[in-house]
Each structure stands twice: as C-alpha cells, then as structure tokens.
Image (cartoon, rainbow, N blue to C red; front, side, top):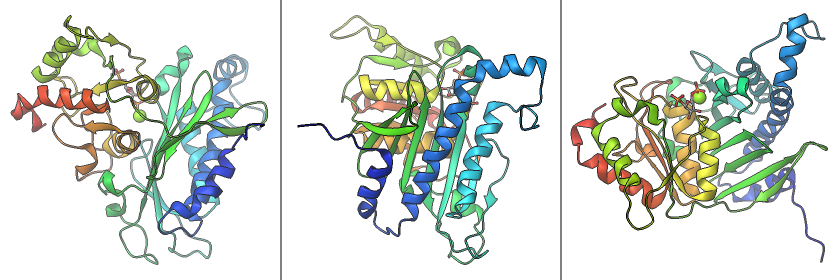
Length: 340
Ligand code: AHM
Ligand code: MG
C-alpha cells in the first residue's frame, strides 16, 4: 500500500477538535506561524548571498534597507499574526514591550497571546550554523473585550496551550505541541510544504549527551561543576559525550532525538542565567515535558515559576528525564544557589 504523506496543513485540521475550546482560532494561529516560518526560512537560507548583494548595494530590490535577519524575522512573524487578526497581543524577545492587537471589528475580542523569540542564536548565522524560532501561546486571563494587559503574558508555563519551534537547519523543521504530544514536520523546500516526518517525538529516558558552554566552567555554581565531573567520570556508561552548538533550538532538537541534557546555568558572569523564561525556557520546557523529558532551573520545575517581568532570565536544565533528575540532585546539595 502506498504510504500517506500528511502535510502540516492537514494535520492542523485533523487535530483541531483535540483542543478544549476549539473554535478554529488556535489552528489559524499555528497556520500563520507555518507561513511566517517559510518566509523566514527562505531568507535565512540566502543569508550569505545577502552579504554579497549588500556589499554593492545596501538597499534591496524593493527599495528597502537591508535588515538584520533577527529584526526581519521579528517583523515577519509579527505581520503574519497581526494580518490574520487572531491574537490580542504579542511579546517578542526583540522588543522591550508587548504590543496590543485589535480583532476583526477593531475590537479586543481575540483570546490568545503569543510570546516568541523570532530568531534565536542569530549570532550563528554569520558562520552558517542552524538557528531557530521559538513560540509560546496562552489564552489571555483578562476578559475579552478589554485591551490585553501585561498579566496576560506573565503566566506560568504550565498555562501554555501550545508551543513550538522552527529549526532552520540542514533541513528546516517545525516542531510543536498543543498538549497532546510533540510532532515534527520537515519542509520540502521545492514545493514549500511541511510534511509530518517525526510523529510523537519522545526523549529517550536516559541519554549520554550533555550540552553546556564549558568555557564558562570556572564561573559555574558548585552543583553544576559536580554534575559535569559526574558526567565525565569513567563508570558504567560514562563518560558521557559533550555536544554544544550554542544554538538552543538545535541543541534541544538533537538531545530530544538522541537523549541528552542542555544546561545554561547561573554563573558569576550571568547571575540569573542567560535564557529568557517567557521566550525560551517555558516553550522548550513545555515541549520537553510533552516529549516525556523534563525541565528545571536546577531546583524547581520551569513551568511552575511565576514570571514577574517580560524579559526575566532563568537558569535552564532541560532534557531526558533521568538526566535532569540527576542534575537536580547535584544542585540540591547547594540549596543556597536556588536563590539566584
Ligand atoms: P540569543 O537569544 O541572544 O540568541 O541567545 C540565546 C542563545 C541560545 O540559542 C544558546 O543556547 C545560547 O544563547 C548560547 O549562549 P553562549 O554563547 O553564552 O553559550
Ligand atoms: Mg534567544
């Protein structure tokens, strides 16, 4: 029998009824992210060429000034969501504050807010290393009909209704969850269609990869140093192997498939860690848990942390369940470091 190839568009329609308050809005929202992902993919893929063209002419063919790709990605995702009038607000790692979006009749009746990091790891573009987009979706908590407020964005990660990422890699993939497991779709660039390639993605319970910027070792808290020594000790299936791309989405994606842990801890250089709770840690934590992995700040579940500001940072331990558990045990030896 001929195998059926499911496109992301078909998959979204199929799954619409899975969603508790389904009125089609969440589906439309994910559809607009799908569209923006294709546009950004096209641009990311010709990043090197843009440099060549830019050298002779810094204004592109449309007469627009050349933009940095992260600013471009921000605009593409913003516009895709704004044009469809399906969200009431967007907060982006690129912008200081959230923006309010009116609904179809210039009202405030839309239910969802989106938080995103439009191009994570963008410093990697210059050296042709994969980058990603991360997104997180919540239902607003303030009444519909009123303008969106900051508290609609400052929700615990456990309140997310969907989250996902796009990895612009050797092939471009969109991976997302709406709380019913994690599915991955690979873009066929020839026809611009995402196909279901990785159904029901799951972390192996154990893994042997640890991903951390070891250049910062001397600045790490003792619990992290102890855990790294544990990983490197010759015993059983150890020493583990180290893999660090320095692009969260890529490191996460590899670890979810192969089994591993990603760590960005506090350090004397970054006392609260580097990653942002709302734009990076929460969506990745939601995907990790839906893929039977785990995510903590070394002490607490990431998704239980009450956010207090839009751009707050958090230490991040994320990956195979048993590996995160083990890292938490090491951190637990130094309870004072929980107060970062
Ligand atoms: P960004 O949001 O400024 O791109 O920073 C986030 C990135 C992650 O993708 C990556 O895992 C991390 O920063 C790498 O940081 P470092 O270079 O300090 O190891
Ligand atoms: Mg980022």
